[in-house]
Image 1 (tube, protein in one colour):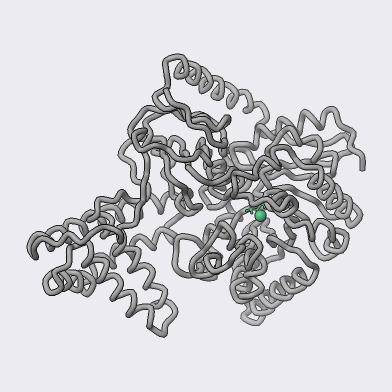
Image 2: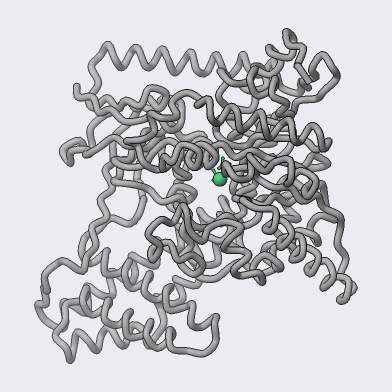
Length: 545
Ligand code: PEP
Ligand code: MG
């Protein structure tokens, strides 16, 4: 038995076969041209395989993210059979004596160049699709595994997973995952918790010979056991039974409401990134959605979702949450959530300190206006609120409010129907926390985002495993900021919620309630556990207010 140590990123235990996913880029392989007939045959076989994959991907994506978001795979499939594309690749084989792999890449580049030079923004954006399609066919020809395609339920291992790849994981096939890099505060780890996938990050090099070996993954302790011995296997089988018993025990807290001795209601809501997460949150008995990370709607595509596309999703979100509050965070792109067509992260030396979140939206106000228009329209269908990420200064709130007002005015002038909506801000920078007394009168609520608040207060990259020790327990500096935020909110009479990962840390429930936080927003699988903790504290606390 071998043990590989990393950081527990998403609790739970998984046992199964390890599948290592290596995605080397194919450009580095040598030219392998044989003859025209066999290269052309290889090309067509690879095109057919890529098409099969896309059919399957489309079906999976429809189930997970809905038809609209899945449409991109249909577009890719059509591109594969595009006559010009195929003819161009054949031409490179016939006349250029290129291997099928090189030919398909050259054909992709040539077509992408033509599209990229077009005036029309939509056609321009198709260049990236063509490159992606050509790249995948070249990967098939080079014998490279597709992103994450499994034939049996497995524990997967990879150098890293992007948030977009994580959100596309097939929950039925992926029992758990371990990444060589990454940290528990990364969005990949957050998604794993939301999707209830046991996960370890920052595990360092995972030797190739572990591929195909039986493993046990302990997402609580951050340990991967490769070829576990009998004792370890039975210990974990027992732990899995206990976890199941615990899950059943927590069912007692379903449907319960938490009220403090002074009559204050404390709610436990869920953090989500898609409509299917909302279904899971509702099944998990969340009292609403405290954070819908809308940026995930902008990922895995080549242009922002249109107002209609967004409207439909927010409307569904409102309907799915019934009368309960559903807080949609406006686009928080940048830093570790790079969205190629929007963010300049690759060009920024410090993307976490760069043009991300509200800054990006204020630099591209049309983006935010479209989002507000969609939100205001959708708010007719339920209890929607909007929340602005990464505020540092009062001026930003003024600017955001002006854009929200412009969105409403434009709807009025078109006599379009729309509803009312609260607009709150996230407190996730020391500047916002220190200025909370000035920001409170300008906003409907505060929501403390401790993932970022901790990283910016401690100057410790939330993605970097070597500095995560600094926040292993909640630092006093951050405690003080949370207290400051809550007392400013109390004076102004606005509510404070907390939607960072700290909300699920039951060791801190007492501190948070004591400070004046009245809503804890956590990943769906944590709702009942946190509710138990709140009820326990509520029964013995007389909060100081
Ligand atoms: C946070 O920073 O705590 C937060 C909830 O936002 P995100 O994790 O999406 O940056
Ligand atoms: Mg944040």
